Image 1: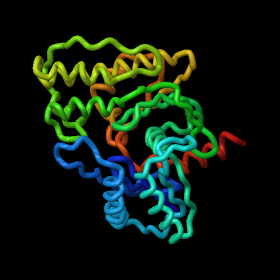
Image 2: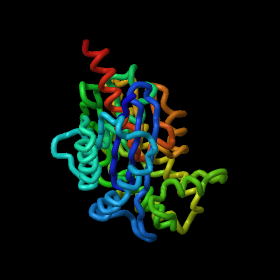
Image 3: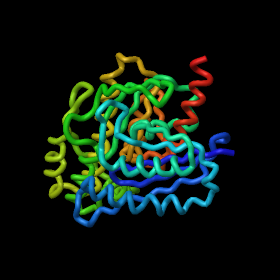
Image 4: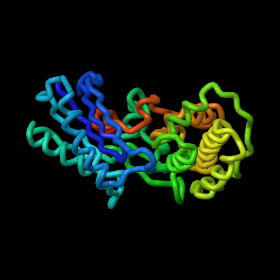
Amino acid sequence: MTYILGIDTSAYTTSIALVDKKTNKILADKRKVLEVKEGQKGLRQQEAVFQHLKNLPELYSSITQDLSKVDTISVSSRPRNVEGSYMPVFIAGKNFGKVISHTLNCEFIEYSHQENHIGASLFDNYKNIDEFLAVHISGGTTEFVSAKKISKGFETKIIGGTKDITFGQLIDRIGTKMGFPFPCGKYMEEYIHDKRVKKLSKPSLGKGSYINLSGMENFYGNLLNKYKKEEIITSLFEYIAECIISILYSLSALQHKTVIISGGVASNRLIRNYILKQIKEYEIIFPSLYNSSDNALGLAFLPIIDRWHNENKTN
C-alpha cells in the first residue's frame, strides 16, 4: 500500500490530499480557506503566502494515516502549464512538498494549478478522455483551453476567455457593493435560494471567444438602487452562464466533443444548471460542487492518470 500526497496553495485556499495509489481511494482531504478581513476585496500575494506557511504544517499534521507510506509528492508549482507562468503563492506549497519529498526520499512531481482542476474533474472519466476543451472559471482566471493528455499532465493552449476582469471578479465586485462577505459567490447564491424573482433585461453578449467584462461591472452596479438584490444576482449569474455558452459555441469549429468546466465559479448551481439545460452539442463534465473550488485532490490523482495513460495509451 503506497500513497500520493497532493499539495495546492492557491490565492485563497491551502489544500492537502492523500490518495491510495492502488485503489484510488481518498484517504484525506484537508483544506483551509485563507482569511480575508471584512471589507477587503482580496489578499495581496505576500499575505496569502504568509497564511499558507501557517496552514501547511497544521493541515499536514492533522492527517492520521501512516505518512511513511507516501511514495509520491505532487504539487501545483505554477498557475498554468506554460513557460513563464508564475505566482508567489505556489512557492509555499512547492517548497513544503520538496522538504517532505527529501525527508521521505520519495518522488516529487510538479503540475500546474489548472491541471489540478482538470484532474479533480476526471476521477471517474480519465480512462475515456484524451482531448477536450477545459473551461477554468474562478476569481483569478477565466480561460477556455484546448487540452490534450500527454505523458505528464496535459498539453494546453488558451483559445478563449476574458480580456480584462474574470467572472469571479465580476461577481465579487458586485457582491461587495451589496454588502456580502468576500469571496461573495456562495453568499449571493444562498441569498437567492428559493426566492421568486422578476426577470431583468441583461446586457448584450460579447462576440467571439474573447470578451470584455469591465463594462458589466458598471451595468450591474447601476441597477443596485433600482431593483431587488435577488433580481440583480439572478440576472448576473444567468449572464455569466450565457457568456460561457456563447464562447463555447464560438469554438465549435474545433470539434471538441467534451467540455470540462471547473474552478470556483463552476460550483454555482444556477450557472451549472443553466449551461446543462442549454447545451446539447457537447458532453459537459463538472467536478462535484465541493471539488469545483480549490483543492489538492486533482494533484493526488494526476500521477494515477499519468500512469494509466502511459501504460495503456502509449503502448
